[in-house]
Image 1 (cartoon, helix red, strand yellow):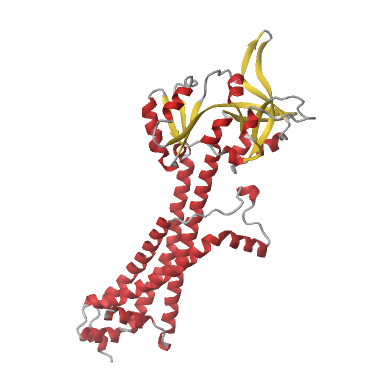
Image 2 (cartoon, helix red, strand yellow):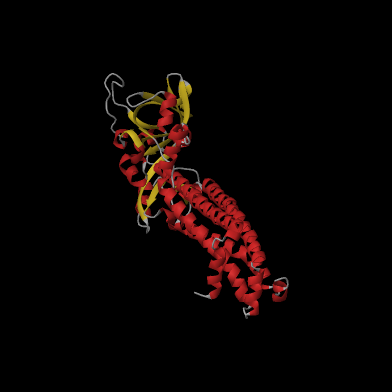
Length: 424
């Protein structure tokens, strides 16, 4: 141990004549610890929200979507699927039809997006099967007959839970699907209308999807929308979702014009950009807590310098260099930073895994629902510790504390030994 570090540790020890300085030192350590702990918890929660949102989006959507730039349908989609599945990183691909319709049941009407899918392929390209709370995907092609309700088998439809609630339509009930594109008949223009049997409900956890989306069989959608042998696009599932942008560009280059590939990140760019911006802003705001603690370190060291003027003068008269004096006081700031950061890391990594238990305890004690499920659509508070972010937090915290100690240490190193011993 160097003598500079030894002296720094002695200065930080509690003495009767330095109670106030010792108190401010502990406050500084506590401020750093609170700042680091808050940063780790908030960043973990925001990362958890981002991951949870991503999982919900990919619960009803594929990783990459291929569409026709000309606006028409894709005729040779079977050949394209075979070609796409040869691309490295692609797990599976399947066709879909997307269109807007009106669903009616009695006097209730809702404008929704209908997605025509192949039930056998859909489970390979999305997580819709896992989001079903009632029914099966196979019921779309072969709806079960419900005695006393349908009376006969109709084409099946799966609705979002919120959409089913607004229409009052549940498994076994029938709904009318009305297309905004009318057809010409001897009696004039008449909108297309077909009855569908509700065969299942899904819950993605996102209100926008659950209240505005329905699924029908691909063959039924081709007949209803007049797209026989065509598809609106091709949905693709890949092995590593973080490689979606690269694989999307590869598919786009392979297929050429007029086909275009969009990955899930580009389709939700604004949403994830906003989350990323919020994460950065919260990081900056919470770093201010550590900065407040850094100001405490500066004031503490200035008081230590004033109190140790005689000691500094004696050290200099014994041959201590300016750099040695700077090390003595900068080490004090570094020790405070290391201590506070360590305590903050311990607190943060202890709280994050037990966050939901803590929230449940607070709800039981305060008698309130902190995160209402009907508002946030969360069964639990998501959290995901990002170790890279945590390392950055540790580095920032220690660096801020060390930098804060440099100016008082520099002032101490400039002290003239004669002035320090003049009145002794």
